[in-house]
Image 1 (cartoon, rainbow, N blue to C red):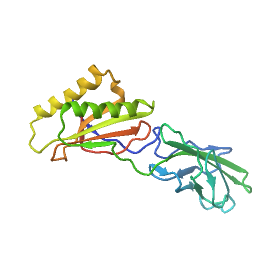
Image 2 (cartoon, rainbow, N blue to C red):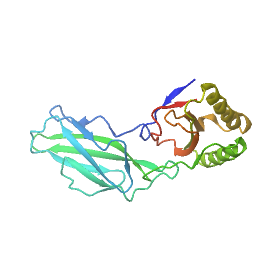
Image 3 (cartoon, one colour):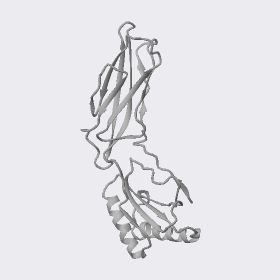
Image 4 (cartoon, rainbow, N blue to C red):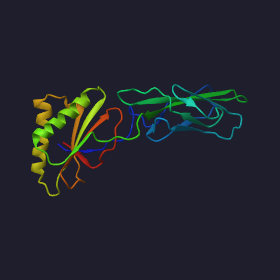
Length: 230
């Protein structure tokens, strides 16, 4: 069965999300937070902005707080700038989340309301395949696949991606034969766990090429939006 390979950039199912706000009395405004789309690269500034349902009240005061990172902007402001350079990262997933909390108070109205959101940070800027090869004897390919498996299985949070391209006009029967040979080697002969590998074909490739990737399972990467999973 074939599926379309579409791996979006998210972290622990968050791409910047906010919790429901809590207000002490009915007259308080609703708060919504907006942060960066996807993940912030470690060392970059992260900006989170607050929007109130009633913004015609000049007496509201803002108080921001974080569970990680450092605030480098004015606290009493509708937006906060965060330094992500000294955050402790998860070594396996190479990423983490910052919980950004906001409380607003209105002294004249006695209003207190708060909300919070989670935003992802990742430790490195770019990912590269660990191996790329063209036509190869299967004995050589088996050694390359074993090397990928070793690197993937060294961490509980890594997934191996095997993305193959075929010469234009290659019959689907031949494609399936080569994919099934890889599956037999990985999952029957070597008994590697199936849930740690993704095998796909990139239809945009017009030459014979295989790319092997090792990526954190919590940090998906858009390798190929048109790839077909086998």
